[in-house]
Length: 171
Image (cartoon, rainbow, N blue to C red; front, side, top):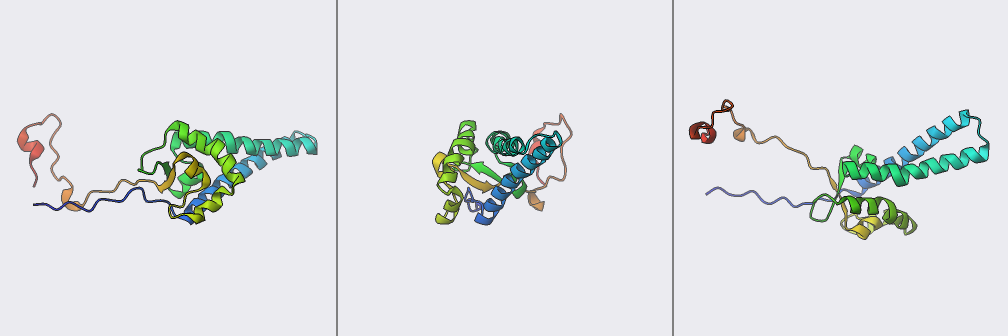
């Protein structure tokens, strides 16, 4: 009788340092793009007050519009993608679009007022305030692994050859 491998415990939550690095990257991306667009506006000879206001508005738009849209499409923000993380529910399944949008906009805005990133250090699952608000966890991206060498098929049947001998034979 063949023994079954031990079940894999999922989700494995992301480490605190990796999560904080991803948050820092997201903030850095917003500030860099906001600063770059601010420099473009400076070349347009806007007044200092208009320039400062426009730069702040651009950075805020990126944080509250562009990052959530990327998160909906990719199930992770740019910082999480770079760090190899993704969003999931506590069972390891993908979050719904509604929960991602809620997490990335309203819950993060409120969470930042409540020192949301600090919450990562207060619980075993490394969850921030916005994770608790929508029931999400940040987990390492699932990787596809190569099957063990003894399970790799040596002789692949020709297309159309569906005889029982060719389909079910194992050397």
